[in-house]
Amino acid sequence: MKEKPIINYDYFELYIVAYYLKYPANIAQMPLNYIYREDMYLILSTISETNNLFSISRSVLCSLIDNNIQSIVLDKIYQQVNEINNRSDIDNEKEMQNIMSHLKQRKMQDDAIVQVEQALNLLKHGKLNDGIDKIKEIQFSRPDELLNTTTLMIQSLTETNGFRTGIEAIDNEIGGFLSGNLTTIVGDTGGMKTMVSLWLCLKVLLTNPDFTCLYFEKEMPVKDIARRLLAYATGIETDTLLKASISLDIEQTNIIGQTLKASFQSNPMLENVLNRLRIVPQTNFHNAADVYQYISYYKPNIWCLDFLTQITNSSNTKDESYTLQVKNAVDRLKYIVSETNSFGIILSQIGKNTATQRAYKVPRLGDIEWSGTIQQYSTDIFACFYPKNYYGEDVDNSYFYLISLKGRNGNVVIPLKANPKLCTFENNLDSIVKSNMENWLKGYKGGKI
View: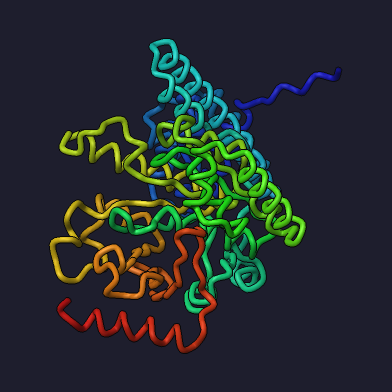
């Protein structure tokens, strides 16, 4: 195998010095930490401090550096300056950029070596997560060329990280969702956060046939989620499914299996959608690093975490470190969606007894546990409001609302007809039903119930 030529970094650094002696006005663009030789660094630092607009002669340079540079080195530098003087500005710029790329690559390689050594030291001392995080921070590959702004403006019309959800109010009123962002769904205990988030994920998968989804379930056993999906797919209510599983009724179980098979045969898209949704059991992840591991491996377009504070290392909410743990977890989740260009949905509780102790039960931003951190990182925040949770039979038990508490592209109120036993919601409502639901909420917001 032919050996790669040895790179002459001494020549590269000398050329950079000569270039900025010729064009000192451009020195502000030069990262001085790319230069390793002490004498070359000294000259470049001196040039940077002079604020010269025109080339610097040898005599002027010598007066500035107090003869700290060997004469033979100055000879080589100004020999290179003469060569630069004999070429066009464009050729000199091209050569300088080519050399700069080599110096940048060297710096990144050396930084990576230092980080690897630091990571190994952390791993040797038993700090596994810290060591892995240090390795992931390494940036070694050369970045792509940046597009000019006008090109980006045109591409913004034809290429987008946005996607539709299949929910009219979200798609038409706020333009859908954007990959690389977090959305939070908040609600009181019993507010059907899990159920509506599952339904939302399924709607997105139905609307985007090439999408996949991971659902991180920390609050309940994965079989409970599977049973809800079985109700959704077969139209058999959850209490019937639960009775069949508890009693080990073989005949009933066979009927349910045949019903599922028939549902798939009559609606092939249903099976396809469910196979593009994977559930991560509560025992398989414990922190944001575990979430990142699954997302890096499966590369889902969307993912959901049920729910936020379950991925901290402490159960004591009054522990001083707990708030920091929550903030660090959300920091990491935001990093995950940015790096993987995925879309994340986080479920979060509202504070205990916030809604129950007042007349107006719709969650507010201030009710959210760790609301400051969530508001900072979430593009959209939706509140779940299920009136039956508070008023029983005094209100239609199918009424359910997703209400924007924060929206980067606008706020919406989404009335949904809930069917908890089948784990589904209806969003394409009859105009009269929709109007009745909207009017009920308007009246509720204006009253003192």
